[in-house]
Picture 1 (cartoon, rainbow, N blue to C red):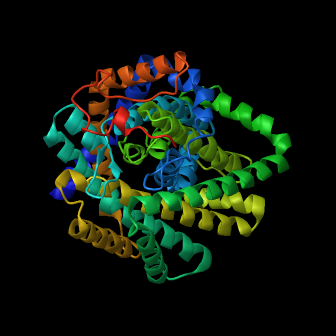
Picture 2 (picture 1 turned 135 degrees about the vertical axis):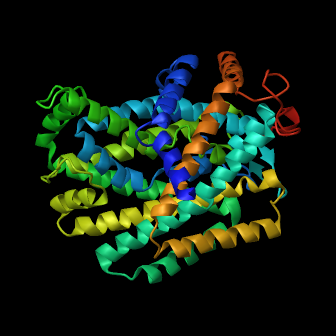
Length: 475
């Protein structure tokens, strides 16, 4: 009976009903309109903030570390397998619609990350914590809804996703190197434990070191493949555009498939609106000391994840001489494409990429769920120890498990999380606009923006002592 209920909910959210697709599309259009297409108008400014994003006190997490933590969770199997699924089911035109949803998602990502900063709190260790549960409780005064979100987060990011990511890694290593899943699962669990036991700061430092490196390597390989096959690039771009608008022989049916699969896989990959990334955003101490600063920095995460990394995978597949059959294909299509370009080394490269991408997701997912322990007054040694033990236990179990039912539970948890989060950030739109206007007004006066909650008309209230002149520090 439980399985039937889960299947029914998932059918409505992700299946034929595709309720979430329409809700996330609405959110992207809504925030793009209400914020004046901020992702386009302020595109250059978004990058200028990267210059000071690594500055922070030793006791705090920098904006850049928060960006890398968010990318750790975003960048995963969706960038490799998800893109392959979109192309196999929707054709090359799916990539164009993936770009479209990424541009819209940047506005949604900005909105939720600003709120993660405005309503952040300090936990028992004095560290910043934030996320949808906090802005729902403090901004909307709906503790019951905050608890619903937190419970769904624990079911998804806290437990189910850790098992699935470990399973993905062990399967990839078994296929490429014939390593028994149990052995690789034990090693992965021990490595993850050595990082997450250090708390959010250790996770952020790990992400800061690993994420840029793996991104540069992956992009570099895609660029080299593109240069080698440069003569075919114009035809590839033409094919993407024609297929996106159904101007190929297959016509309108192909256009519909391109739109559906491109949007769906783009949303899955960049997580804009799911309510996950605000946890990383809320943990940061931005420079300039204003919530909008972190909104811009986290908006970059959507850009890098989908516009850059997903496009790299798409280029590798579309420039390879491989059969795209129209049947659902995942990571094996990506592996076949890499093999066409790099011979047997392609299989090893994709296996290594999956391992690294999924491992960083495992570490970041722990941090997201741990951020909500404070909501239940469990951010103490006992609470953290129990949660950590359960998380690592799920990882080890996932190494050799059959995960069909766990996938279904995770999909439902993620879907309900997204519903609650979109509902909340739409209701909190006046706060997002007011905070953004405050930031722009200070910039126009030539000042370095600094947020004071008493000066800006926000809904509900922020935690006392978080935002105010006496809290500002020169970094």
